[in-house]
Length: 116
Length: 110
Image 1 (cartoon, chains in turn brown, cyan):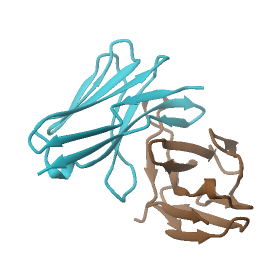
Image 2 (cartoon, chains in turn red, orange; image 1 turned 60 degrees about the horizontal axis):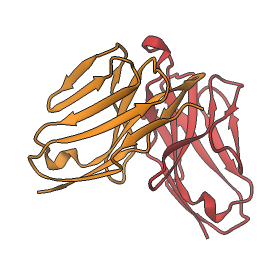
Image 3 (cartoon, chains in turn cyan, brown; image 1 turned 30 degrees about the vertical axis):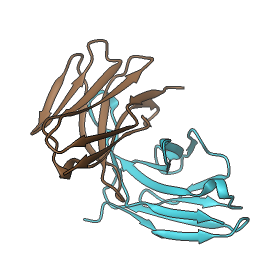
Image 4 (cartoon, helix red, strand yellow; image 1 turned 120 degrees about the horizontal axis):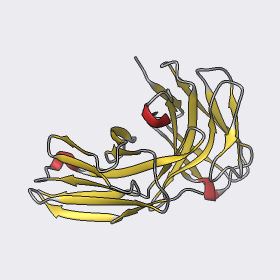
């Protein structure tokens, strides 16, 4: 059981280039998330999808777009990459059936993106 | 929006010393979760606390949820090199979202 799989693991882009980060989960989870992690900033939510066919903005959505292709897959697209988007990106999923409505997240291994 | 503050940002200890990280929220939390991220790795769920005043233990790790459900702590007794990493708390941010604290990075001198 793979859990959450992200590709690519590493990517170097030039300013203005576009790219898509792919994420797939095999746990039949309803909710999926994209976070970015920067030193001293913790994990900040970019976008999330509570169910297939829906997406919503998180704390830092500017410069990104997402697609919930089906229940398994949730992709993150950078249309015109900027150096400020240099970061480690984590995809996560949850089954949102915990007590008190809590969502326990399962994370992918991360994608390290550098924008020159 | 919902914010969760975590302190300290960094902690360096000698192996065998204790370690504590604290998490505070300005609003009452329905639950709080703790995650650990090893260097170069991804966050991994450790535990979830739901009840006011709840205390849970996992071997040398003790997790507490405050009586007012606005703060939480993680205490590690007699640290080992395997405890190295960044510890995050996370609280509900509405609509299936989780809001993470900034994390406490623990380094250990063997």
